[in-house]
Amino acid sequence: MSISRRNFLLTSVAMMSAALTGCAQSRVVASKPDARGGAARVPRRLIAETRSIEVNGRTATMLGVRQTDGTRGLVLEPGERFDVELENRLNGPTIVHWHGQMPPPEQDGVTQFGESDLQPGERRRYDFVPRQGTFWMHSHHGFQEQWLLAAPLIIRTPDDVRADRQEVTIFLQDFTFRDPQEIMAELRRGSASGAAPTTLSSATHSAAAGMAHMEVMQEMAGRNMPRMPAAMSKAMDLNDVDFDAFLANDRTLDDPEIIRVERGARIRLRVINGASSTNFHFDLGPLQGTVVAVDGNPTRPLVGRRFELAMAQRMDILVDLPKEAGVWPLLAVREGDRQRTGIVLAAHGVHVGRVPAMATEKSGAVTFDQELRLSAATPLTPRPVDARFMLTLTGSMQPYVWGFDGKGWDDRDVVKIRSGQRVAITFHNVTGMFHPIHLHGHYFQVVALNGNPFVGALRDTVHVPPSATVTVAFDADNEGRWLMHCHNLYHMQAGMITEVAYD
Image 1: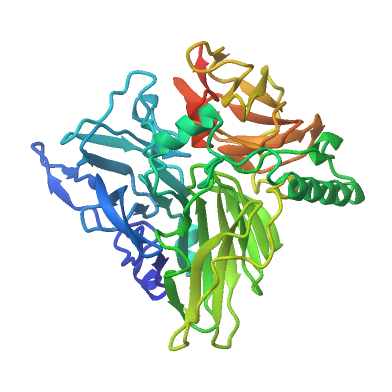
Image 2 (image 1 turned 45 degrees about the horizontal axis):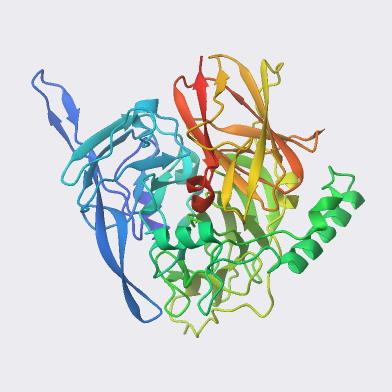
């Protein structure tokens, strides 16, 4: 999923006409005269369909979303509208959500507020001004996201064009040969612990999680940063589901995508965690990278070699390769485990050997430490908060029920706000798991951990630690009714979903 560096030279800052390669390839949108003699836009077309992929030597029938030329997902050039016609070629209904975008509420791609499912054979047009950055699209119908109905959505900026960097998109997913509804049924029964276990108990990774959080606490104490509570070192559950494989751009490390690069190439990585129930540690190996954006929003530079991505989060990382020829695996390691996936950057003509699908050691928990070191390049304008809310994240593995304030969707307490307000929401997580909380139709700034303020990143999905409170702030500037939910698909389906509505 790479955009050739040489092709950038052919792209104007105004827009259009980039020759793109890879999973999320762009094409020029043609125009034709309308009845009044003007130019009518021809929408891009996306197709939701059934497809086959090979996973560890086995063929699997999955879902997907692609353009008419076969490329997965979508790339828009600077200044280009999001003008898309979505066609449903599945055997059943679907709906696609444009994650991180701020469309009119009736184009958000959810059915809870009046937008109907897209029926088989039906087409529907979406047309709005997009936010620029690294985003993604995924089904919001049942368990279709776990069936891999998801893809990158990249909206390039004029700065991206001027930077003249080779762009590489890495789309991470968790994969199962099983029916996700069967997995959900076993989670609800608490009975998936037989010969082929699906559910992992709370004790499975408690030692690794406790050690990881103790290290984080010590590190933060030394830097005089907001501290995690002592309860963080207690047993917690890291993973609900045991998956058959983990994918990067639809492939495992048995047959990874190899992207050829020039010596000394300047790369922009767009890493998207599109997994349904998995957090990842993203490892650059010997390379050093600089984070310049998260969830599509620019950040102050953060330098490192290993980064963390919770479910639904994205990260843009700048990497400059050595002048010498080489091979550089870029690997995503599953939280609390040795399983990993990834892609390989390789200089032209260099042989690429086998990359093991297992790390030498288990990873720890994806913590909040990185979040404390991220800060927005342009924070929200300081102003008084007009409306404050406290939402308690509740639930457990047994019984497998999750919610906000002990309630699910049917008996939810609506978060009521008014246009023009500065809104602050504090998430109090009393469960034994992290929860990636996503708000539709808005982006927010992460502003406090356990009541201790800091100037954090702008995001649309925040990873809330167990036994902790996290506060986010945003401006109410997109009227409508919007979903807010945990982006662990199984937690959302088990009740951790609510509504933010303008009064």
